[in-house]
Image (cartoon, rainbow, N blue to C red; front, side, top):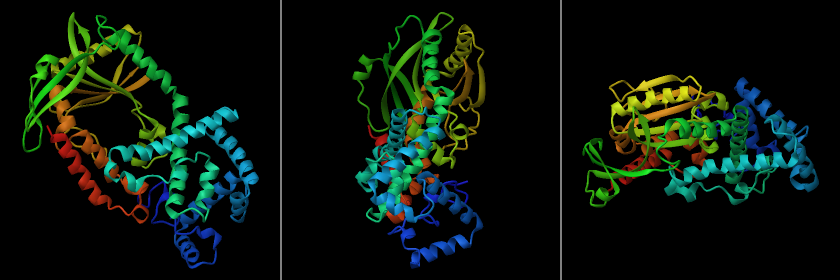
Length: 436
């Protein structure tokens, strides 16, 4: 299933379908040529007719009206708009399971709007940074957080076509953000994240170090000229690293390491722990053409670890299971894939590389399910630097190859050639990676 195809569950967003945003809102001109063409496309496809009725009825129910003619009254009568907004907030609060407190519902809606804006701004900051001004959201739409205001902007002739599309897009993204927020509250993800950190600090990391005590080290590596894979790596302390001046084909990579105890031996480990941000979860739902976060987002909690050797990797995994027992919890490892020791990577995510070496699994313990990705120093350097493997390249590929870039920024509105931009951005990130 693709987000841009006929099986997209986001049909109302597609610019090559019957719900495309045109130069003028067609519903106020029922006998225009554009309206007749639009209705003819519905008559040819019974499924689209069903989807149209569903969308239309949702709009009427949400606004508390019985026909499109009433939308004009809401647009130009402030008191009617206020009434519709107050009613819609209560409806949305009940739908997303937010307690019926007006101030609380308002705060959640503002947060959903902020998440929707962050989805676009996160792409402007990195994957589409050179095109930031091209895809910047219209000021009036970015400042809106009331769903009624956004919906009415879609039907308001005073708004430019781009602004009306962005209003619809923001509504869709806010809906996904609301589903994610509801899921997080149901699964107590914030509490589980805090519990996971407590588990690591109490049972996993060495008691000889204070919480947050990190040892600064550097990985000094050499890379093959054909694909920039790591061919040699050694660990340096701060003083030794100051004497190094990398040349072409070499990298000096900072890592801040903790330690864990194994049979009385202190073993260094670089760790980064994350709770996936709501905007990242929204993008994942779009990439997977899915609206249900319980189905699409299975990696809410994650830990990536880097160790000196495969032997240390094995020691760390065993240390984890023993630590869970100390915390009075059994730990099981699920969905294991291991390419550190020569296995074949079984991931099927669009844009991912079969050449990515890592140990990956989900650990179930203490009422949590946490994704672990474990590297050696060499595989970690390949993960961030190797051609066709590097994570920065993967980020570009998955946004473009899943159709999300074109979905969020359709060519007829933003006038961007996504195929050419994909190639340019891959080349740009590759140049940044290989610079010394």
